[in-house]
Length: 170
Image (cartoon, rainbow, N blue to C red; front, side, top):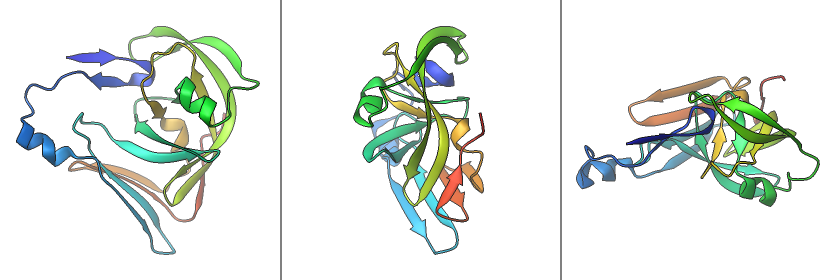
């Protein structure tokens, strides 16, 4: 059973075809590498068949769901509050996601998101005002300046040539 959500997100409610033994192969793990030239963050598929990256915004640590189908990065209200982003936001209604559902979001400007050894500057951030999100979403607007993103054989890898990349211009 799939439940659709914001930004193209499809949360897996149940996976009857995944046995307990097979599910153990999906334990979330991450690996950070920095050889001084290329910085890498590798994450492995979770039991829910998603990719979640360890992130930080304004010193607040959070896990973010990588959603390659989401045009924008959206924080849960609780993550936005913990990162100090609830002041001076511009609220508006927007059509988000493949369901064409109208939800209330607030634009919170551009912010730096740290993903292990890679920092992404000037990422346009929105805040979910509807309370629909259970987890913050890292969308396509964060990936423009990265050297490479790959997904293969249960592993997502973000790579960049230096310590800082830039999000997509707005």
